[in-house]
Length: 246
Image (cartoon, rainbow, N blue to C red; front, side, top):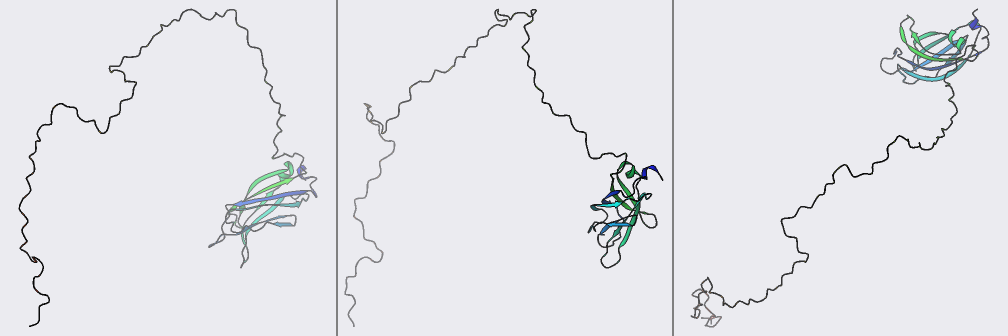
């Protein structure tokens, strides 16, 4: 009996079925409904059926097994659930427990095989064993050092160096350039507003009479009385109306 399996009698082994991938498809017209079966030392646990899981099913279910001295493998099988007929076998595998019994933790993906030894997909299991001597604590990170705020240090400004030259106070080294405003070629605008025009315009005070018109005067109107119209009717009827009977 090896040293890694001594003292496991009656201890608990925690098995988490994470899921399956790349499963062999046993359905022709619909998606298969896989489930996983675990067996160890006569104990049997089964996951729920992943409805329409197809080739990639997710379970995330946890089971506990009581370890038996000398038994170092766990049987796992994957089936397809059928309603009107027997379930279809997809594949199985034998999970070796040496790593989890010695280190306390094992997260691996195991290959499934058909009855003829052909590839049938993969199943992922996470195993925990609290009684391992060389346990590796997973998922815990080293604690960070306590936070200590940094206090800024203030110091007096540096004293002037005895070798530094005094500031230059003499005349400017660059000539001063003065710019003059260019003179405009137009006279400046009057500051007074323009006078409004009077309406109507005042009468002309010209000393000359107006000249003759350039257009001839209109012809004079006719002095003859209007003639009676030769067209009917010419006037009221002069006889008796209605005429007397004959």
